[in-house]
Length: 191
Ligand code: HEC
Image 1 (tube, rainbow, N blue to C red):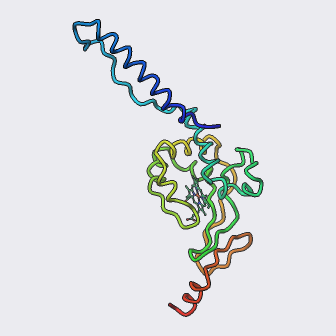
Image 2 (cartoon, rainbow, N blue to C red):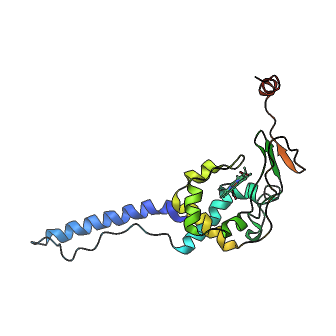
Image 3 (cartoon, rainbow, N blue to C red):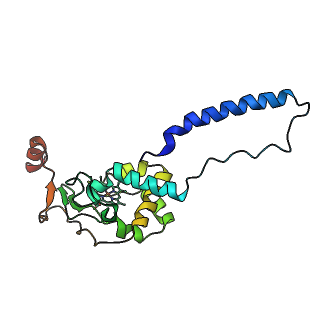
């Protein structure tokens, strides 16, 4: 399901070319310039609710949210029904930051309205391994689309495990980031 954007420039150019030609033809026959009957300038097209939902699903599918926030998604090569998406995961991500767990976004987003999400997600800072920088870099419409789609799935499931600070050994399953030997030696000798 490709978003229809790629087709727009070609269509827009074709329409613009047609308008320019017909305007030139009209003006050639007029002695008075048209002012009062000129149409209002076009506003940029607003995405419809259906467009936003479809785009949200597409973005969640291709930008990796499911890889971490949907348990078993990568193991099943993405063959998971949308009704099971984004329920959070018990897989810990362990490193110098402690151990983090990808949140249940269906429950989390049920706690906030769209305006709150737009403000929060534009400046979101999390611990690793969440790519918060990618969310912050998204266009407003893309973050709005993600919100609409996740809300359309409805709240379900339970919360992901609590974050563990550095030094607390996580129970399995977890992925462990192991630093390169030089960094480990430096850390062990205190510098
Ligand atoms: C590489 C794994 C990974 C990917 C990819 C990922 N996340 Fe996350 N996400 C996490 C982890 C782990 C946390 C918890 C971070 C923490 O504890 O501070 C998190 C936290 C979050 C939070 C904050 C939850 C809260 O209650 O504080 C949001 C919102 C979020 N992710 C949304 C997304 C969205 C939307 C996408 C897709 C664009 C995405 N994530 C992609 C791993 C990931």
